[in-house]
Image 1: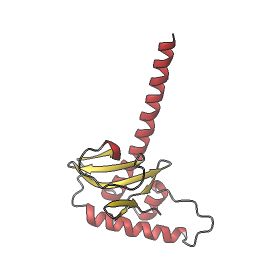
Image 2: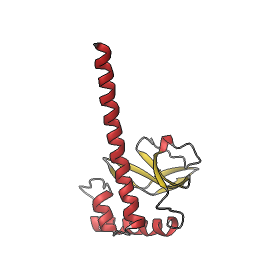
Image 3: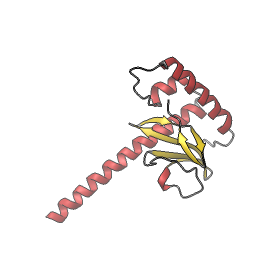
Length: 148
């Protein structure tokens, strides 16, 4: 009886982890489609997919944040559109990808890579099932995500 309870507990835990993983990749998948296929506006993308840190005493308004997102999306589209293959891309947890990849200074449990033709195209950092960052800077050979 204890073995059955243990097995059931394991199955429930595994299915919960799988559902959370599917939610995260669904957000990223929808984001990628909105950026590259549907060419959605920065406002739409920010409203639907981007996590903004709560700023109670911020000197940067939401409108300025949206303008920053718009600039980053424009750069992303310009730099990655030619390499992006809408019929051949996948989303992989950063820790599960075994190919060459950018090394990050922080914990990578909630980081994902959009891969096309086995090439890392976009690195994405999630927070609360929204995109905390899709952009990074290199510092001394390691990367830091830029947050909005």
